[in-house]
Amino acid sequence: MANRAAFLETEKGEFTVRDTEIGQPGDGEILIKVHAAAIQPADAKVAKMAVMKMEYPTTLGSPVAGTVEAIGTRTTGKVSIGDRVVCGTKIFVHKKAKYGGLQRYCVVDESEIVEIGTTPFPLAVTLASYTPPGALFGSSTLNLHRPSLPPSPLPPSEQGKKILIWGGSSAMGALSISYAKAAGYTVISTCSAHNIPLLQSLGADHVLDHSAADTVQRVRGLLPIAYWFDTVSLKPSISSILNILAPEGGEVIKAHVLLLLPLVMAGVKEEEFPEGVTAGMLRFSTHAEENREWNRWLLAKGGFLERGIKSGAIRGVPPTVVGGLERVGEGIEMVHKGVSGTKVVVEPWA
Ligand SMILES: NC(=O)c1ccc[n+]([C@@H]2O[C@H](COP(=O)([O-])OP(=O)(O)OC[C@H]3O[C@@H](n4cnc5c(N)ncnc54)[C@H](OP(=O)(O)O)[C@@H]3O)[C@@H](O)[C@H]2O)c1
Image 1 (cartoon, protein in one colour):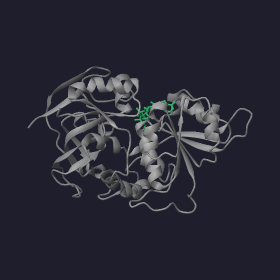
Image 2: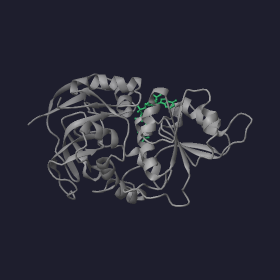
Image 3: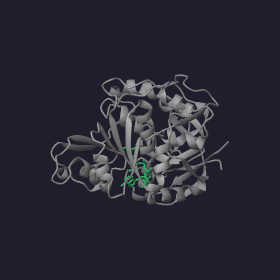
Image 4: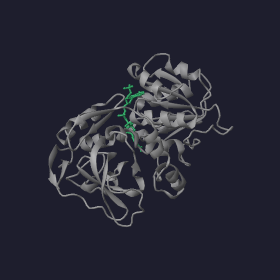
């Protein structure tokens, strides 16, 4: 039994596919035989722009879906050998190559692993991001009412409330729509015209073309909006939201806009915001003490993510499977150039 991985050999270098040792799972860790691994924008930013310091050679990719191959020490019995699972990877935390997803065997944290039943592996990796449920339901983030399965009605104080999810065809936006709808909120979202049917299929109530001239005005027609989430977080999306909140010569609507990138990356300055409008990047750790209860709700055995994936209640963008490890470089290029309404996925055994 040997491992095989797509290594990024040097900073901003090329990917090389070669045999390597299988990582051993340590305390609280699980070894997964990886059947599908996603490439996320952060992987492309690290590979192409070196936005984060890494130890080279490194591997990238998250989440991974596959079967449990080995169980480390000090684990809790959450999963057994052979279980079909999905999990976010820890390559950006631990920096060691055994933690990246773009290889045949990957070491993950038991605490974040989730069983997927019969869900196809490439589909599972499109569903397992902890960012949307962290952004929506963390007590220090937007703090929306959490969904349950079977669904239950919103409490009276939340009933009828609307959320704007700008960029609903992004991987994060699509999952956010799905979670917000599962909780019972009214969702307003934006995307390109060709992705409107995708967002409608996820249950979004109002779907608008983000490049149409009347979109800002149409969103204003849907006010009041209780929650504001920009899953794109670049200059055009932030500008559009500011135009909704602070129309020229009109009254400013007080709001906080949750972003997924720092304002500086969008080239927007805080001083450009009118009084009463704030924006800030999501800061969320699945393991922070304040998120203990959130963690149990989402990631426990039989928790919301497991049941949401198995039942089909949680949906996102469809996967685009590019092929095996030899296609990692191509997949990184695709994500770097920008994808539309899909997640790029690699199958390490193909
Ligand atoms: N802070 C965190 O913890 C965290 C976690 C995850 C991701 N992120 C960041 O969040 C961002 C989104 O990640 P992702 O994986 O969801 O990205 P993605 O799926 O690669 O995003 C691509 C989508 O962005 C949409 N888009 C681009 N410009 C738009 C605009 N002006 N208005 C509306 N939609 C627009 C496109 O929509 P159309 O093709 O329909 O136009 C496309 O579907 C990335 O920058 C990522 O690095 C941050």
